Image (tube, rainbow, N blue to C red; front, side, top):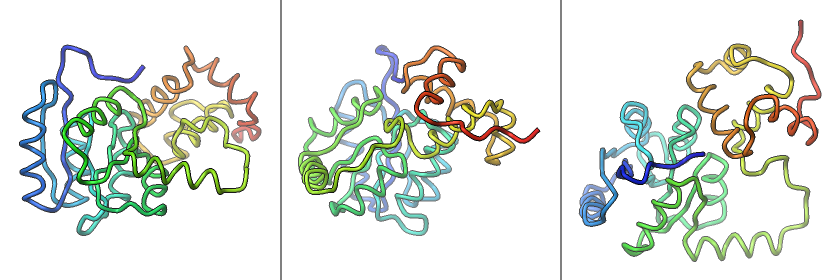
Length: 225
């Protein structure tokens, strides 16, 4: 299962283009036990590069970033390192921003202005593999689903789009190397996705994942011989 060992601090990368906000956030994080700031990024591109090199446990991600925006940066980070938890911390509270962030793989969404305790709880929750939303965002989500027409949920909704894609290929009987070739991603990225899939599905091995995936209707197509 995902999570940070209890005796180790949660390593955090902050991605925000406002120096004053980063400074205040650094001071806030430094005052909380068990949290360690390991890097700061002022652009989306820098956030992706630092996440790759530092491998933090959590990235606090602003959505409004110069160049590569926070949504695209989140997608790249999660795609390459699915064990990294992205917690969005932003001013944007519209439905489109929230759902775009979740589709990109963010595990949580808070609005700037969240107090110290709320932020600390959210960081610890996403680091432990949970999903977390601030009160305003949670109300938006509840209102959206209350008013939306009922539709069947996709198989394994706890998985990200990329993880579901990898699971589909696993269910077709593909090896990790075949998945690498199909998706044009690194072997390490595939291994990370597979590990994350097993953890979220709570299965012991590939065979059990295949059985559950096929029971859910995945893996109908087989790889060409």
